[in-house]
Length: 184
Image 1 (cartoon, rainbow, N blue to C red):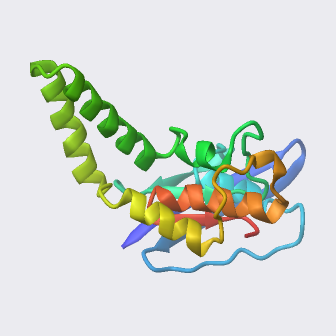
Image 2 (image 1 turned 180 degrees about the vertical axis):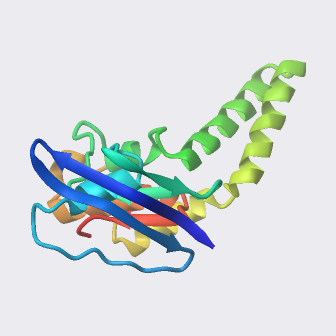
């Protein structure tokens, strides 16, 4: 099953052509490496595949329902946050689903009525659809494997490698079908 395919991708910066007519596919289970000299557009291509940048020509097609995550070469982390705050912020789909569920549970406990019951039912369905019931267990397992233990540590105090591991943990929490790693 093809997760992602490209057709005639092209990109240039100013007068410099990075790539053109690039056509390929990535299927379930594939492990693909992109090896080339510095400055030839590897990171740009990966950002295009992840939907973070737009090609000048061609298109990227991602199969419906396939979740794509990218670990960028230089992950953008908010230095004012702790590791826990970063991992818990709402840009991750799994985190959003869990937070919506927790909010619905709290609203229903505070004021049970038809509206809060409806919100709870929707949140419950989203938890089921996202398979988010084991989120806490998965979170602790990912953090442990990546040797991230002090969740109260400030992002600003992390080394480059630690920052990369925190960003990887965040990407893995969303349980992507396709994980794009830029110089892991």
